Image (tube, rainbow, N blue to C red):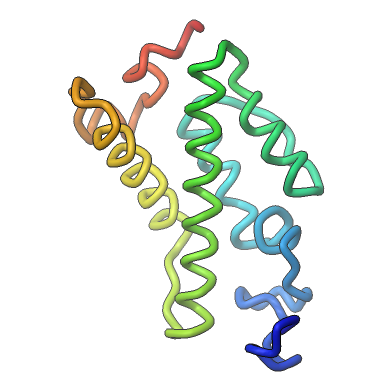
Length: 144
């Protein structure tokens, strides 16, 4: 809208909550997309509050598992993948009138993170089943 690509009518949240779409709303407080974060944390087995700004959310999320540098790097990867998946789903809704459920978006986070790790680590040998249930154990990050 700011760049003249979308009209003012396109300023509302695409998930029907009636709020104006802002970065903070889309990625953090949207009734639909905001629930993805709690689902991702549940999958990872970590807890933590959601903050109200995107930079604070990134910081809190990436440090919510505690531990060392490897765990923080993994949490950054998962946060970035989750944000990318939200953005792509938002664009699918806007431009193609298609969208995914939260369960489908969570599966995409799991799948993309596994693909990323396999592509960047030739010795990563865990399959979908173990990854789906315990990603931190796969990476031996549960006690770091």
